[in-house]
Length: 226
Image 1 (tube, one colour):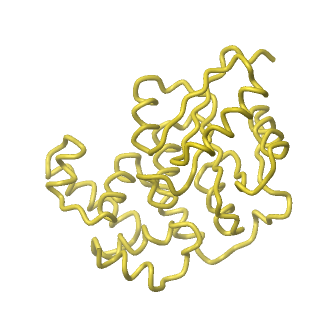
Image 2 (cartoon, rainbow, N blue to C red; image 1 turned 45 degrees about the horizontal axis):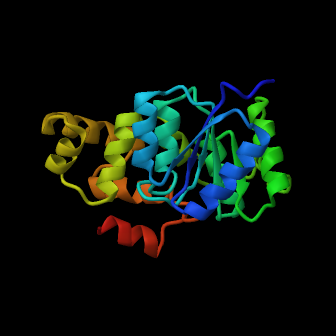
């Protein structure tokens, strides 16, 4: 199949790794359009201009991501665009969660070029790819939270991300160009969907979608007080 019409977005804040992925894609799909982004905001701005992308290769820790929140937002807002997570985090929990939040694949950064090329090819053929030794069916006790978080709309995900950053309603309203009343409505909907009673509890829930931090502990308590 010709790669002439393919459009890839490489989203990673490390230029050297972006360059390595670009080289891999250029070899595999020499006629494709390849764009680079160093933050979640760069990805969304590109998709707002043209949402017709064939694949996003997404790092979990670049600016704006907030754990899996960025993945959740992209999958909710641009459901037709496949996303493959390419991450230094190789924990089985992180891989399972990425797939549950809608990723089409998960490629550990430690894997060689040939494996990365094979994984991308699998996803471009309509399949899912994860490391073969990872059990995607294992349960770590957070399935209910995952299901609740998955019901959030794209705008609610953005509001939750901003709550986690400690922003006030008026600040969120300014960032999203909406009224404070709209933000309050989103916050109320978030609390209801997550089954919590306060913003702090919502932030704690949000902190549990950080890769590898699924149990309440020091990180989540710190996030709650942010």
